[in-house]
Image 1: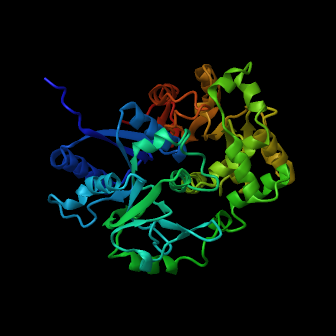
Image 2 (image 1 turned 90 degrees about the vertical axis):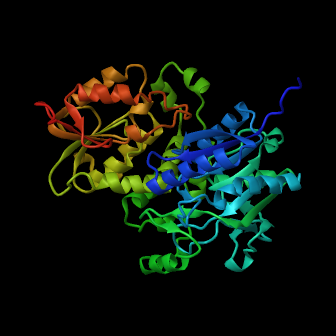
Image 3 (image 1 turned 90 degrees about the horizontal axis):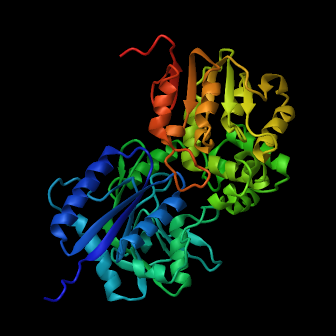
Length: 469
């Protein structure tokens, strides 16, 4: 008997954070049931990758699709709603998968097709870009939305179908660090540079979940625009205006620019993009300490760029409010690097020991900064204690095989009733070569064995007499 021809294969790839809205989870579950029952001509594969660095997540998704010999790749973000009218019955909205694929079958030059969705704030603009005469990219206006398939320069990566044949032409890595352009612009630009077309079917509309658990749709976007305008005093044109000039992160950036002699944000972005660690390179050094001492100014640029990402700004706001700076306190910022959070606590009156690898560029910047800001008397550079709180921010994942020994020494210096603040249990980016120690379950057990118990994954309290059940 002749061998049965296989179904076409679709990989659904979702870069995601640790938390996803229940609305999205419910909608995506209905979506998977729908395509499994109503679109039997396709075999579906799922690739979910952590989004701590989006370009790594998207590269990992492409690799997963290639490994499964998929024909099509549907990129979805973790904050969308397909059935945004919430009909709760079988709906043709979930058939958009087949619709986007049919567009590409009809035009061999068309390799990327997206759906229409809107930004969650500001003007709630459609996430579609056109190319200007100057070569730059600009948002299309409402009057340019045709309600059908239309060729565009860039379609939003939050809902994007890609013909896998494109990856036979475009070399890897397909996505780079988001220094100048986001990953959606990158892949669309690559496709067009190789002679392919990019389009958006603007008759397919996908909802976008707001942080306050509201969904941006064509029906409410104007009201949201007005609501947002009430709370905005100026238009955010660049990253500098996300924070007032007196803020902790702006001061952090200004000090780093003075220390390194950088003249502009673009210079920082360029250097950050050049910081590309590789496991083989790390292994070529005699120790992790020697590796980190070799990183130079690019290390500091990378840390600044990372801490100005939107999700990191939000995380900074949260952690910066956890310690009562109205009371005298003594903390430890371990594996501190350029120490934006710990130094902010110092600037607000706390005493802090900063501990990292002597000679590492980012750590030497922190030492310089203490002198520059006149707070040397509040800062120490060795493990001492006992501490009221310990910061383990972007720290544990960088420790080597001796992490238990190191952590035992650090945790022994926390006073009873003191706190450990950490983002370690939110970090799942195993694709980062410098993240050599992601052992969440082992670390959780190890920390509790030292009588330190979680209020949540970010805040742990030491109670030598035990933790109430």
